[in-house]
Length: 213
Image (cartoon, rainbow, N blue to C red; front, top):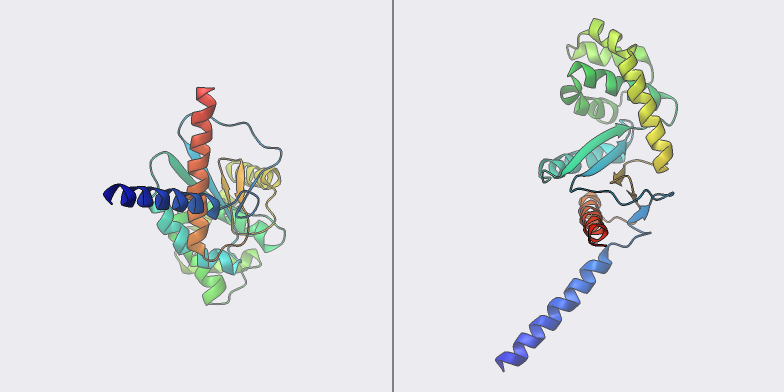
């Protein structure tokens, strides 16, 4: 009887593992980036979120991804990159990197989401952005210098190049290891982070197998 029960449990666990493995499918919840870069080495995996302050989904996703990122293991890094789809998004990307260089990004990041979605401020022009920054005590002389700096221009150009390389057409989009990006069909924002965890585990397994070959 005990042996039969043990076999039943083993079969149940095996079936459950199959269901879990099939829950997230390549080509649906995540898609390979073409051309597919080669499998990397080591145990460090980078996850990047492409976002825009004016995107309501990005605003709703922010607390979820922030909580998720706070619990990442040491071998997984998380970076946010502002998209440039033209118009205000291009301005916001430049502002993002200027604030980052000043050490003000962490303090102002959520304030931008709040201003655009809760206060319904468009922030379409430099004057509108400057008004928000002044209200929050940002040093405008340093900000103006940062906006015109080579460092910010270089980061903006890099962000634009990564958008093209990864085929970013909507936000929020997550890119894992520069080889996969989030797809569609998510039932919740939490599921998006679960898919990232799934892909990160897959990437690490691919690297392990590559070393063994």
